Length: 342
Figure 1 (tube, rainbow, N blue to C red):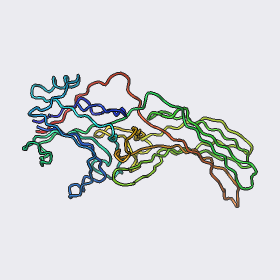
Figure 2: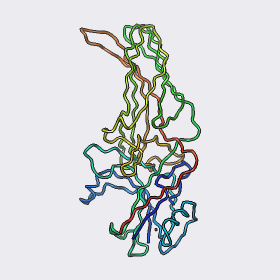
Figure 3: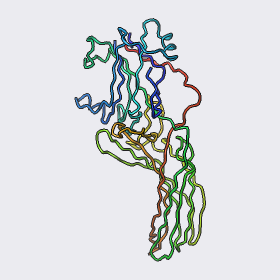
Figure 4: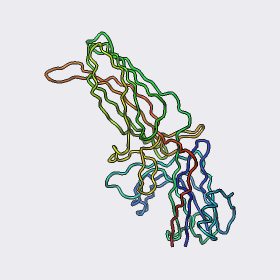
């Protein structure tokens, strides 16, 4: 029997460093999958290794310094267990998957990390062809948490004039802080000063997710993860000072193919992908997939009515949005996860 034990499957990217992964050979690989697994069987490989490391664990060569997690797992696994540890470079991307369509099968496209241990017939030959029955694999995740310090929120404003109106419409929008947690309600402060002779008929707020795939091409696309209309009106020479709240959630976007999500383990629930935080001095091409968000606040201004046709014009501002997970309080509890191949 070959059994692989890991104390946890989430490894935190602290921007300056990443948690250590901590039984024959063991490999840790970071790869980007950009095609269906079915095509791999046909000899077309749509998986690109971004980073790869391998170490020999039996006979023992380099025994790592044992952590509390190692000690716990060694007690569970027994006398024939061999500890190992990997150092994940902090310039590697975090785990991100692209949401498959309803009819898509197999592994989702995106960036993943996999620990694989195997029984080898040859010494020091990482290219040896290994039978699947001789391996044990576990997918792990590299994740980022929100920084402890939250900055001031962004603010944007615009002043727009219209034909047949001497004066403009002023729109100002702002956020309380520069970062929000997944599932947290986001209040947007909106100020409208309508000096024109037109009427603001409604307010529309959209949250766009932009996914920039920088690893293999210049593929960049934007998908709306929230679109909400508010019935507030502002008559000519009127004002509005109000806070409108939104909450972008994955549960409202389950059918959108290609939406970027935080990496998932098996079939467990996940969420919209967290905003990519770029470490200083790291080339963005190495990070595989970059995710960002912006909020668009749009006023629909009624210009005139011609033969029952309503002619409108838009007044729009944009605010950057950072979405992340809060850092858990206290210490991580040790989770024993194993996978056995006989």
